[in-house]
Length: 129
Image (cartoon, rainbow, N blue to C red; front, side, top):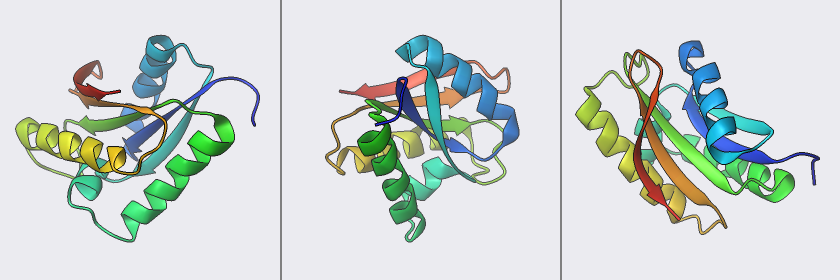
């Protein structure tokens, strides 16, 4: 097991959203490190169960949980997303569907969905414990 405490983010590859998510998660969940799993538009990938990308994300989440002891996974949707260029309402729907899919993996984690507007301040969409 790695030293320090970890949480996991399933986040967009968009560089604008990386640091705000890391900083928020460290403060919110009182952890040392964030394992960042990135794809363009990951909320859509998970919501629509796009394979083999979903399997890749699932494998990386499992490593974070099993090897780093992560207890929480955050799924991020954000404004102005090139990988999922849809309105906020559709992102929120995607985040919720993505959360349900991650829950179906039966990992010992809490799942939090967040929305990031262009001010890069997270809004919690939902939490599954």
